[in-house]
Figure 1 (tube, rainbow, N blue to C red):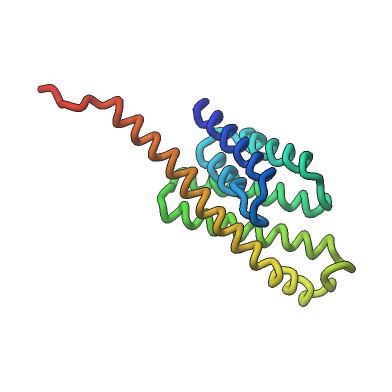
Figure 2: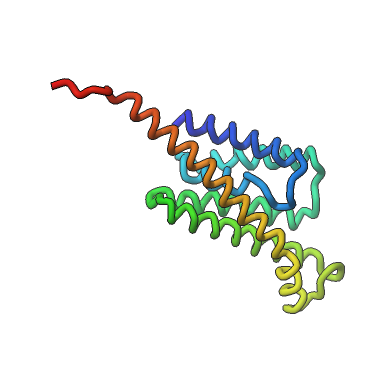
Length: 177
């Protein structure tokens, strides 16, 4: 399990570095890092590793509206919990479902916060303002979904392939009778 924690720290560091490089808006490995951490860590306290790197990157890049920021961190915590839920029933289909659920969760929570805390500014304070907020955020949702599918495929694929390859190395090549 210590190896999993080191791997979570390593991919969290990569997520941190990815946020500092030019990239498409909402195209981030952090959704996948949090889902992975939820699946492969034993304790909820390991949520703090990727969130710590996220906070460090926010410190580096500059903070934004506190209400929206809380919604981002809350959505990442919920993605971590989603990984915990899927932990015992892991399959490629469930990974695809968790990817979609993660992207939707992030989209719904963060854009609600943008609408709620931006009242009087960008959007009207009624249902039409909320719907406009969600409508204008669809391109960002696409980036979230694409990055989640890509990074989940890479992260879980590399990890599970490595585990399989290492388990096969321990088996003798020729059965002795």
